[in-house]
Image (cartoon, rainbow, N blue to C red):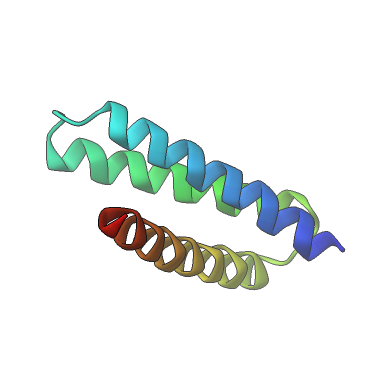
Length: 82
C-alpha cells in the first residue's frame, strides 16, 4: 500500500513538472535541465520520506519516472492524431 501512495505522489510531482515545463517554454536548456533535476530530487525525497532505503527509493523514483515518460509520450502521440 505504501508503494501505491509513493507512486501516486511521484506522479503528481511529475505532472506538476510537466505543467511548469510548459509554462517555461522560452527558458534556456540548462534551466530546464536544472528544473528536471530539482523535480526528480523531490520525487526521490517523497519516496525516502516514506521509510524506504536509499537504494529502493532511487529504484522506485527512476522506475516511476520512466513509466511516466512513456505514458506521457504515448498520450501526446494519441492526442496528436485526434
